Length: 137
Image 1 (cartoon, rainbow, N blue to C red):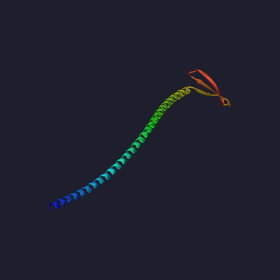
Image 2 (spheres, rainbow, N blue to C red):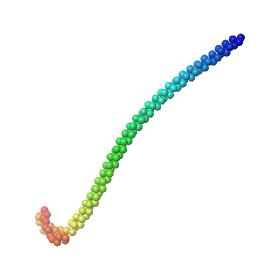
Image 3 (cartoon, helix red, strand yellow):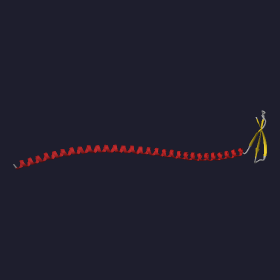
Image 4 (tube, rainbow, N blue to C red):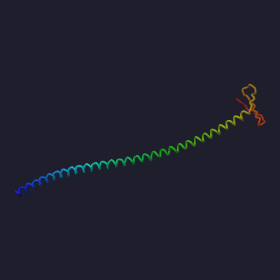
């Protein structure tokens, strides 16, 4: 009887071992599936990182172009401001010249002579002390 009991214990142990082996094989298969899923996810992340790097390079190139355009606009703005200042200075100079010429022209008096077709006007300038005559048509 002792041998039968030993055989039964051995058989139970073999059955338990087989059950453990089947459970271990299933665990290994699950682990294999999980590792395959992880590898695929890593590949997807790698692809996304590549896309992000490419997009980052494109953004950098666009920012460089924008910076160059802003530099050109700034230079044009500075040139325009300089031209406006020059134009303003020229306008002030012309304004003062017009005022000076107007003051000089105001010092002349015009005497209108006869009523014929070829009118003559006599211009007298106090500064010149002389009289000039000019024909008007």
